[in-house]
Image (tube, rainbow, N blue to C red):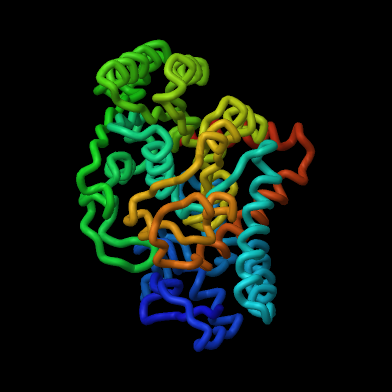
Length: 389
C-alpha cells in the first residue's frame, strides 16, 4: 500500500495505490503535517503560516505557551515525526506496516489516558470528535436524538453545526468541497435537535453551577418524555478556563435513563489531570481530547476515548456515509472497524497520524515529570487562561 500525493495537500490520502511510489522522507513530513486537516492548517505561500498563525515546521525564535487553540510544532516534536515517518517508509510490507503504525499510536494514547477495556478513535479537531460522538450516539441509542450542548460559545464556532450532523466548514480533511451548514450524507433526513445551554448570561457573567445543572435536567427530561434519545455534553475547562454541567448532574441524568442517554465530555483543552479523564471513562462517559492545546502539539491532533460501558453496547455501528469526509478507516481500532457499517473513502490519514505522534512526544515528556510538578503546571495553566479572558 503506497501513498499518493495529489495536487492539494489535503488530498494526500484521498487515494492509495500499490502502483505509486513512496515519497521521499523530507518531502513527506512537511507535506503531510499540513494534510488531512481541512483548510485551516494549509500554509499560506507568502506568510508560511496557517489560519492559526502557526507554521508547519519549527519556528525556533518564537515561543508558544500552552495556546487555547494551536501552537507551532517544536523541534523535539518535529524530530519525533521525522523518526516516525522514516520508520513507516522503511517498512517493506506496506499494508501491515501502516496498520501496525496506527495501532501503536492508539496504544500510546490509551497508555496515557485509557482505562482497562477502553478504546480510542483518532480525530482531527474537537469538532470532528463531535461528529463522531454524535454518530455513535445515534447508532447506539437509535431513534430521534436531542443533542444537549454545553457552552458552545466557549468551545468553537462550528460546534453547533456539527452537533446537528452538518458540515461546519466548506472544506473537509480530505479536500472535498462541502457547504457549511448542510447535513452530512446519510443525515439528510435525520431528526437531530440541538439544545444549547450557555454557562454565561447575556452580560457575560458566569451562571451558577446549580442553574446550569437544572437547565440540563429540564432539557434532557423534556426530550426523554417525548420519546427522544439524548446526547448530553459536559465541558471540562473551556478556552476561558471554565466548566459547565457538573459530573454529578451528568451522572444522575444518565442513571435516570441509561437506555436513552449517552454523555460526552469535552476535555479538548486537557487542562485537567489524567486521573480526571480516567474517572470520566469509569463513569461511562465518552471523552474528547486534543494534543494541541495545553500540550502545545500541532493543530489537528485529537482523539475520542470510548469507555467499556459504551463499547459493551456496540454490536454494529451504522454510521452516516458522510462521516467518511472526516474520518479514515485506520483512525479506528480493528475491533471497532469490524462493527462499522460505512463506506470508507480513505484508508488512512497520515497527516493526522504524524501530528498525533508530535503531540504524543510532548505528552509523554510531560508525564515523565514528577506528579507534584505536573499538578502545579496544570493549576497554573487554568489560572492563566482565566486571567487572559
